[in-house]
Length: 250
Image (cartoon, rainbow, N blue to C red; front, side, top):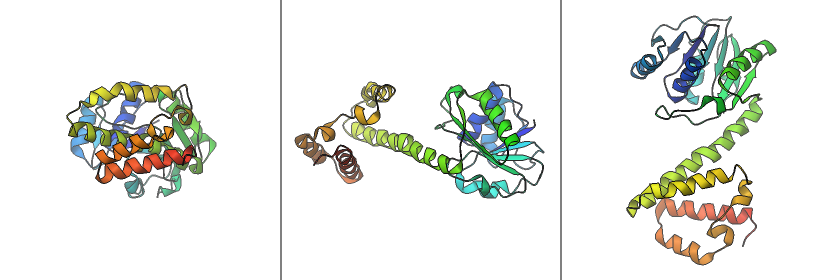
């Protein structure tokens, strides 16, 4: 099967790398950013172009959500399968007369961070059984964790991912701002972060909650609020209020 990846960002890079490592044929990576495409091409030995899109059996679109619809319009072939990698868009967002699908990897990607692709959950959606099998087979060569998912289910998968990943990472960034302000090395907190994540492999997150809010320790809560200002103070109050509501505390 002739496959082209469209995009030059984090998802495009890692998906292309997963194809190469698992010896899945990839004929081209196509996009607008020649500098990034050249880097990917050099590292993975994949032909690239910013102008001429190769003919292919499968196109996988790995661009930002607000660009998927427009980019999908450049594919003029009718007898091909096109998949986007978005967690929040329906397959119907794709504009052409080709067969439409989604190929969603549930992971946060950064080009500088190596990954074990075999652990990434992939969620597949297609218009017919034959295309579902094609995508399922490709994903199964990359990962041990491949599932079908409707768009309705995938929306909630993506929403959960934002809470579990993007919001948590933002809290890490805010925590580092506080530690940096007092010249406290953030490395001191990495064992705590590691333990917090490891704990939920064994304990339900709700049961694993610790801290002053779940203890309803008003003295510590007030002390912390005195040390904060601006958005960090608002986040602190909002998070503690949410914790108290979950555990029905006054």
